[in-house]
Image (cartoon, rainbow, N blue to C red; front, side):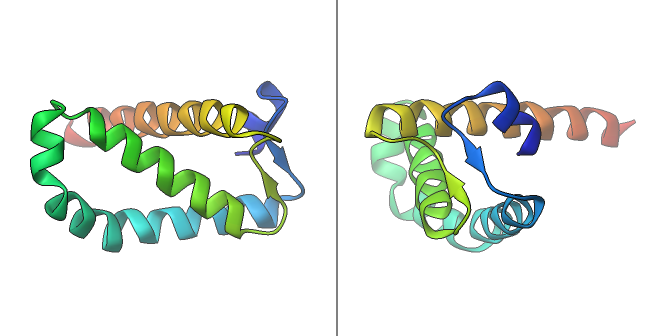
Length: 104
């Protein structure tokens, strides 16, 4: 998160503690709450060919960042969505790399 805050000017992280809390809360939500929401929204996800998963992930990132003191995704909704999209994209790439090396 701290590395992304250097690249993205709209992402403001006050300290490493806020970034760590963000990652822990996001991980817990992804493990516990998000699978239940994905099951409930399966028909919408089917109709949109999986695009709705990206919207759910963006929503979770925006809600978590908004609830943590010391994290700011931007001033307006457009900046927040763009910053959340970059965060989701970087987390997805990181998970893919970890899974690639984990299988070997």
